[in-house]
Length: 193
Image (cartoon, rainbow, N blue to C red; front, side, top):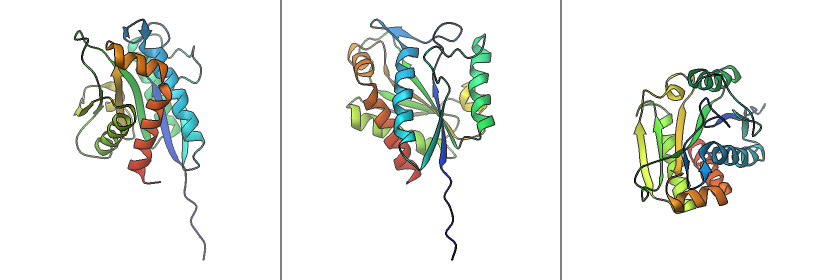
């Protein structure tokens, strides 16, 4: 009897935004979104690399990695890299922002309610909120988002927390590993490995 060899699940982690414009992220409480997403992505990659069930590729392998020369080309570079690599899942990490400073919590976006992305997104949000204690704001359909429309694999955009909320911002900045652990556990719970 020959036992089948399980192939590692390929996770593309897109650390939202560039270090500088074009496509720099939101700012709040003295912090920059692109710095937080970079750190959470690095921590998530460590967890995924330590697990033989997964392979991981980062959109920003170094802190100064700059993708594209415009907003569109920045988004295209991320999607094209994931598609060319043959990723099984695409996870884009972001920080939310609001004019309402009390707005708080984790939410996610997917292309549609059907398919694999929606339950994956729900699993990630549940795990992040369980680990961080932030409110679960749910999963929503945003079919107009480029990274959800153009990926060849199920894609989830995760708004980890609000950079404009002092509590959320401090937690993301001081404990990026908590958010990485939440995303990792959500992926594990969904993939069942």
